[in-house]
Length: 96
Image (cartoon, rainbow, N blue to C red; front, side, top):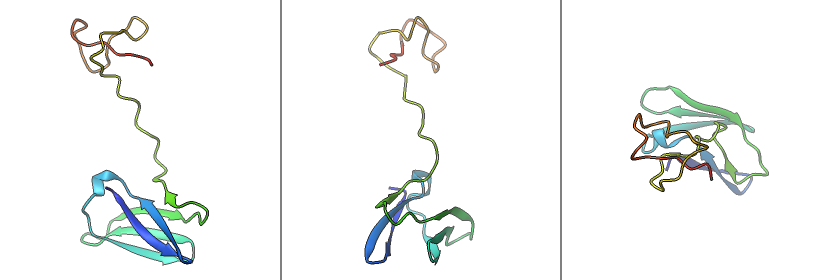
């Protein structure tokens, strides 16, 4: 699911790399708390960060995607249309 697990100081830490890399073989280079995640086939650096030992999951650090406003509820988004649809008759977006 786009993450790997690392044991550090007898504790498991889950490291988010991103779903785009799901199934990719990776190498972890660990120097103390400094960690690099590298694509094993290409050698490309996928992620570099400092491990937070107080957290079980180490998030990717990327901002979350905006909420999916493509809605079939028929409700409007403050009078505007869905940002994905040029037509207004079949799709409306909901703020809530």
